[in-house]
Image 1 (cartoon, rainbow, N blue to C red):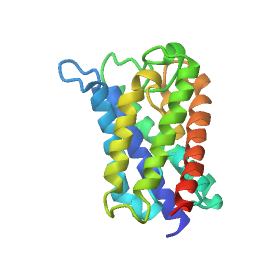
Image 2 (cartoon, helix red, strand yellow):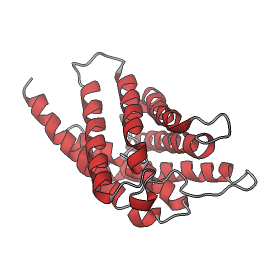
Image 3 (cartoon, rainbow, N blue to C red):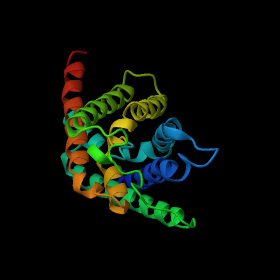
Image 4 (spheres, rainbow, N blue to C red):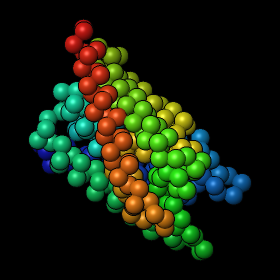
Length: 230
C-alpha cells in the first residue's frame, strides 16, 4: 500500500475519532434529560476506533494516534521512515475533526466553548487531579492501550477480533481516566481539542504529548520481551 493511501487512512481515522469521541462529549454528554454522561463518552471513543479499525485498518494499520505509532515502532512493528508522515496525517485529521465539531457546536444559540473536551491537570482536570496523578494516569493507560493493540494484532491472536478488543480497551481506559485527565492517551486528539478550547489547555498540551508517547514506547519495549519468548 502506498504511503499516501496510508496517510489518507490515518487522516480519516483520526478525523472520525475526534469528531465522534469529542463530539459526544461536547454535544451529548450533558444534554438535558438525555445526556449520555461519562460512560456514553467512553463508549463513543471506543466505537470510533472499533469502526475505523475495520474500515481502514487493512490500509494503514489503524493507528490514529501518535502514541500508537511510537509504540508499534518501539516494538519493531513499524518503520521509522513512516513515523513523521503518520503523525502529520493524524494531527491534521484530528484538527479538521475538531473544526467540524466547532462549527456544529457553535450553531446552537448561547453555546459556550469552554473546555471543548480538552485534556488538563489541576483546574483543567475534571476531578481537579494534580500533574503527578495525570502523568501517571496517561503513561499507564497508554501503556495498556498499546499493549492491548500489540496482543490483539499478534499473529497468534484470534483472527478478526482485534478491532473489538482495541475498541473495548479504549472504552475501559476512558471509564477509568475521564475524571482524572479527561483521557488523552492520544496526542493528536489532545492537540485538536486544545486548539479550540476556551481555557489554558494549550499551555498544558506538552503533558499530553510526552506522557502518552512515553507509555507507548514502554509498551512496545515490554512487548518485545513477550514476543522474544515465543
